[in-house]
Image 1 (cartoon, one colour):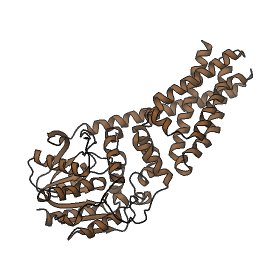
Image 2 (spheres, one colour; image 1 turned 120 degrees about the vertical axis):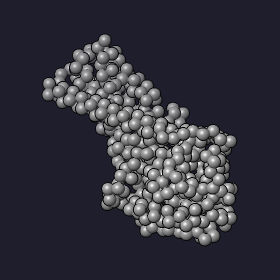
Image 3 (spheres, rainbow, N blue to C red; image 1 turned 180 degrees about the horizontal axis):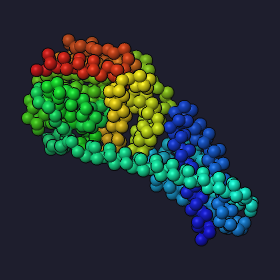
Image 4 (cartoon, rainbow, N blue to C red; image 1 turned 90 degrees about the vertical axis):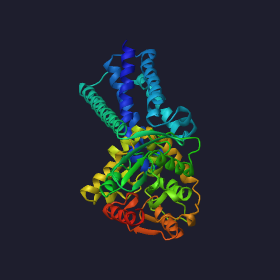
Length: 451
């Protein structure tokens, strides 16, 4: 019983310390120095804590110096740590065991598992005496770690439940020849279809929809392929998505509509204007994902930060929530592709809008298929027959958009007959500081072109 209690306590102490040190590593250290260097830098701290835990627990439970008792404690803790790593930690990172092994960094992994072996055998070398002050200090540290982990877990669970509740209401599902499509409608007037960007769903453009509805439009928001309740079909190309836009309008008995495609929603919006020209009264492309033969040099955040966000955090509810909670500038500069300093100096209304966009991708797990589809579209993007787009067109972008949409926006506007281009000097991918200007420009354009 003593060996069992000591082993369980050893596992909990090391697991909690690893959880908190790992959080600091992935949010602050890895974006700065890279994943391998961050893991190697974390190991000495982790080992120091593990050895301190072994010393305190061996003495706390008065384990005999016999190798069987000491190793029993260490091996039990090691087995539980490995079980937790593959059953809890990997799913929280949005990875399967197969994916983990396929992408293993051999150097970091060798150091990690060697450290686990050291942890397992550390109880063998513990001497029999200890000062009471040391016992109290270690017990206090473990208690603080446990309390911090509990607070993090409870806050995460509350926020994720709230995110699920948010997307569970406010939309409807309609069956169409193009498959089920989730949508919402607000306002009265000329029809306007809002097509969301990556990480979206009908909810991403809901605030935008309210603003357009207040200006006299009937606004339809929807979830594209793979987002929320709209399934991803076998063929999920921009052309197929454009046909789904038409199917949705058919279901709502709307013969003609203006379309606003934001970011990754732009390819299907352009395809709608090409494939369903008579039904497209006007086209607005806002910071669009679009083709350009020679993209201008992009103003990018630190590559390691962006790489970690896209490869890890955006695939996991927990990791994305943790990044947004602990380091908003990291998410704003990578996923939201906007200079963080612009948000810091923005007014209260703009800060509230960006705070909403920061949290909106949750639950990421409900948008995973759509995100993967958008990534595939982005890396294989082709030039569309822009010269054949007949609808009045407005294209808007900002020079400091970290996704580099300014060059492709300018190219697109130059090749669509009569298109207007609004180039902002700053604002990033979320046009921070220019929201009112952008809204007024779009409404003015639609009022003269789409009615």
